[in-house]
Length: 75
Image 1 (tube, rainbow, N blue to C red):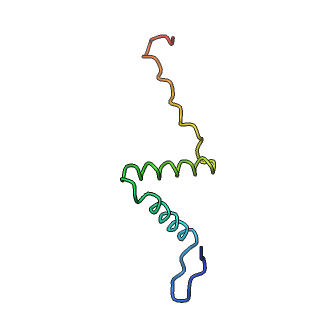
Image 2 (cartoon, one colour):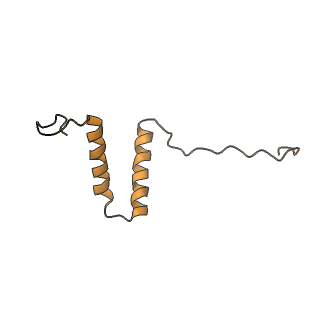
Image 3 (spheres, one colour):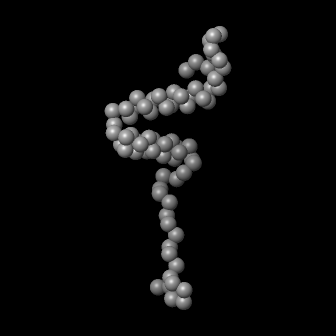
């Protein structure tokens, strides 16, 4: 990855270049898939990255228990 611009090109931040490279890599990996499958694969990879960097847990979120109707006793 080159971060220093050539004399005839404008400066582009490194983070933006990395995003462009990531988008191109994702496209190359999923261009043969139908749209739905490609989106699933992108979502799967994004989830793996989020788990690897500690943004989310590997387990899906657990839903809260629905309380009993007003006045009823909890079993």
